[in-house]
Amino acid sequence: DAGVTQSPTHLIKTRGQQVTLRCSPKSGHDTVSWYQQALGQGPQFIFQYYEEEERQRGNFPDRFSGHQFPNYSSELNVNALLLGDSALYLCASSWTGPNEKLFFGSGTQLSVL
Amino acid sequence: QQQVKQSPQSLIVQKGGISIINCAYENTAFDYFPWYQQFPGKGPALLIAIRPDVSEKKEGRFTISFNKSAKQFSLHIMDSQPGDSATYFCAASTPGGSARQLTFGSGTQLTVLP
Image (cartoon, each protein chain N blue to C red):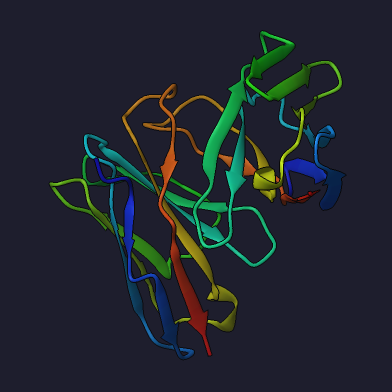
């Protein structure tokens, strides 16, 4: 049973570019959340998708957007990249419900030059 | 605004010793307090979690102590092993939404010396 898979594992972009990160949830999970983890910091919640809709959003600008597909996989898009967007982007999946555990992927390391 | 404060930032313990990591929170609406372990190049993995209706929860060598009145909780790792060397994050969340939205602490880098 595959866990949460993310692609690519590493990515290098330049300022002003756009990037798309991808996530396949753990088998059977229907909810996907995205977190940003800056170097030496704890993950910060970006947003969460369920039934192909954004359900919750953290304190991130509109440059961060996402999508969930009918097979529950998800994409995170970041437009107009800034140097400060350099971070590890983590995807977490779970079943719907407040008592369900979150399972994290290994992340995509994004470097913005 | 950081809502979960974690200390210490780094911790060095001898093999067999006890590792203690502390967290404090401000939001009294938090109702779920997990601890995550993260190895380099990996995502966080859930270790153990507690709800505020209990003061302690133990799973193997890992114990969470919870003090609701002080708004503090801590992770104790008994008989620490070199394989426990990792970064540990406390987190907290409020109810609501289709799944938990976690607020993480800043992390503690634990090194267990052989």
